[in-house]
Length: 258
Length: 210
Figure 1: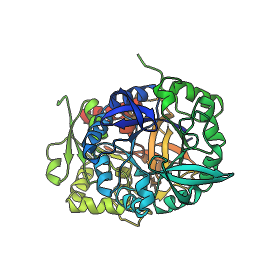
Figure 2 (figure 1 turned 180 degrees about the horizontal axis):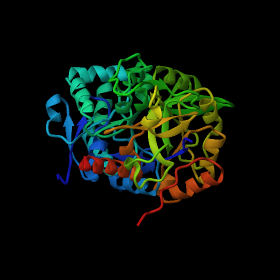
Figure 3 (figure 1 turned 90 degrees about the vertical axis):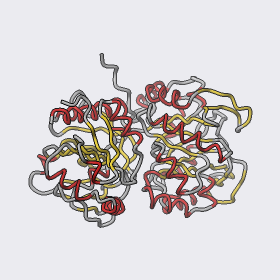
Figure 4 (figure 1 turned 60 degrees about the vertical axis):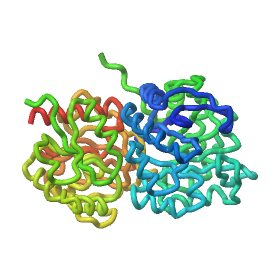
């Protein structure tokens, strides 16, 4: 049976893992490949790098750390942030990423999803949707890290993105992101119940129980979190143990063999 | 005997080669990225990796003059590993886009039926239908990483002899195959942690012994 995935997300700027509040007051938290390797060892099922380097001339640094990571952590790697063209996606995949996540660029130019899926296969195309709650059972797509509203309905955009060629959806509740108040399981359910592709839950994780709820109540196939892992508030193994105890299928790390 | 076998990894623009290069290097092989037929000269094994659809993949193999050398390699029963799309291309054709593929194995590449989610993305259990040195030291039912919507499906007489393992997503499907020196896996060992490295290590050992 397909396992439910636990995915640490690393915010990367200028080749370092950083942590800040809404992209300000960034604190250096280390070397991405080193952290990636540690997470892989601790049982991460995949990794996501979110490149928050705004300056395009610094993209070379990103490609270099993607390659170093692919050479150290033998688990799948998704790279998001700033990919706007098929050529940019090609460069990231060539450097060693398995998937690219498209967000603002896909909203501005939805056909980008189809072009990338035609070239690299839909399994390589993740569409990231940042959703803002606007009322009961209603969510609006926001872009540019949540700073700009689009007026588009998040569930309708999710369906459209899949029709265009998204192989996976990374759904972030902007209301919950960074608050530790739990995932928005209504949002997750609204999307996961209408699309065939896997949905990755993001935004709001505080503890293992939230991961269980995202899967059981939200219908998520995978759950992503950043700060609770970076700050070592919870270990990946603890999250997976809670999921297993709730009857969810998870991949437990093989016991060390002498 | 060469302590580090030289393995040609076919590059036809279908996915990430960094992971497979690093994984093979880690388990004791030297890698030559093969973009034309000349690159097969003097190698001990060939690996065709890749993700995506069959028709563009076959077109790119043709354009690079690689289709016939791969067929010849397989006819000679030399060590070969197909990964994901590289496994699917061994069959006669693909239902995904109607492509005619290498036809070394009887059967077709078919869409996963009754799958709860598609693409089938993530870690799933690989359950062996018979023992083979490729899985030496790996638990039966160990998790490997999958990313696909279609699957190479053996057909006709001898199906049982071709299949090495099965995996279930909705329905059970063939997730590893063997025919002589030809091996294929539907999952990605280069992205499957320690068990994936062990499988590639086993492949390198088989190449060494060949």
